[in-house]
Image (tube, rainbow, N blue to C red; front, side, top):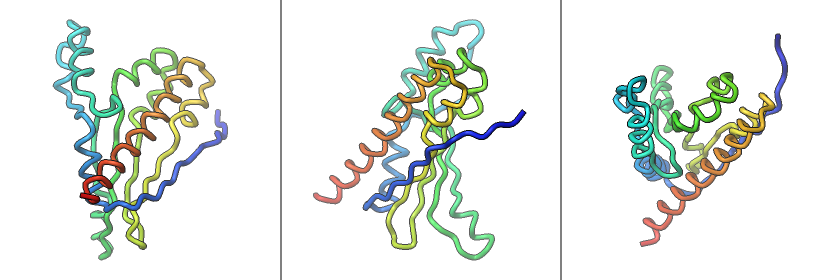
Length: 167
């Protein structure tokens, strides 16, 4: 079975330096590591506590950073571009307990790159449109909160970077 879904894609242009933005973004996020899941089956409450403590700004954690722009060195034209895999296993589990298919989109992806005009650009698919396709009110409610978390995270990082440069 196949079906088409409508996606809301967010594209932002920020007037802050790429390296400053990405460094601050990475510092604002907690870090996910497999060690956080140690003893998950035997002591889930301690795992939940560790995950809550590990969360960063907006309750989000960094799972992975792919320096995508560096890959372009293969073709002789490296760029400044990073793909971030971010989210929170507790938030993901909140959705997947209602509809396991939500696991397809958790964690989320955020792409940050330097445009030709040297502006920092951010691209992502809005979580509520990704998860909304499952037509589950519980999943959609959590996805809408993720919309706000991503927007707030980006705004906070931009404000921090701008404030540092004003000094």
